[in-house]
Amino acid sequence: MPDKNDKLIIAGKEYKSRLLVGTGKYKTFQEMKDALDASGSELVTVAIRRIDLNAKNEESLLHYIDLNKYKLLPNTAFCYTAEDAVRYARLAREAGMSDLIKLEVLGDDKTLFPDNEATLEAAKILVKEGFKVLPYTSDDPIMAKKLEDIGCAAVMPLAAPIGSGLGIRNPYNIKIILETVKIPVIIDAGVGTASDASKAMELGCDGVLMNTGIAGAKNAVMMAEAMNFAVKAGRLAYLAGRIPRKLYANASSPIEGMLD
Image (cartoon, rainbow, N blue to C red; front, side, top):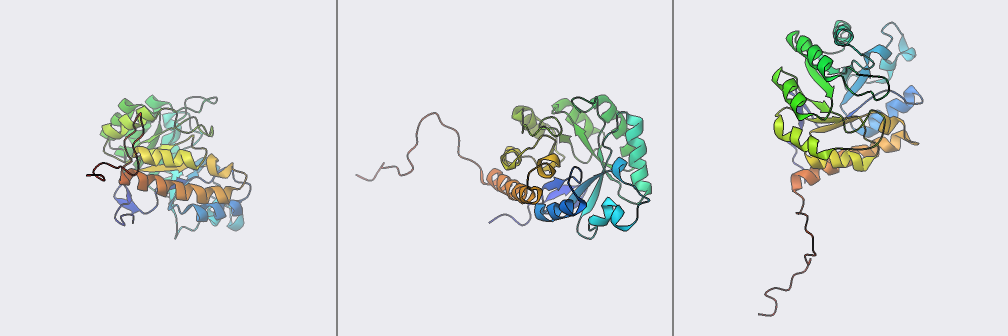
């Protein structure tokens, strides 16, 4: 049985689910709502630049997110400078959304890789202003440590380019990050299917954030449920401790001692 005390803790708050999900790219708001329910997630990202804070009722994305069930994680998606990211983070807090912020500062339009220097610059400002910062970063252990040292609440290294569905391209760097920092490590970007999510958890990651892998599936709601199970299974496998890899066979029913 899983340990009921095994919970994801970010900035002092506990979450039962280790799956974080986004709200973009769904065909309809209703599909998004159904997928969120199927995912079992408690922490939901919303791109601040996609939200019309003046929209009313059904016109608003936020109308379809039950704030009694989900905690919002505002996201500075589509920001390309530290200044823009800081501005949108402040806007989210002023709008009463959250002081928990997913910091995203992109380097270019083609790869959507993070600009690590600008990310670090923005993170320093936001941490000083009392934000609980979860930065999207490359799978660079040195940068992860720098982000931890300035007071970020977690680090969110990419598995692969945003929306690519390639899964974890460099598990070795992820393992080094896990050994380097003590704050939560949450895989962000590149997860394409359930096995990718499970692999991230089996490595020892504290959580997985995904959007396209769910929203872009033929059946988004079904994929959300699959990701829910995958994250749980991967975490259980990590806690259970896998058998060591061996080059040769090892009998399941050994006969040593049976004929003595």
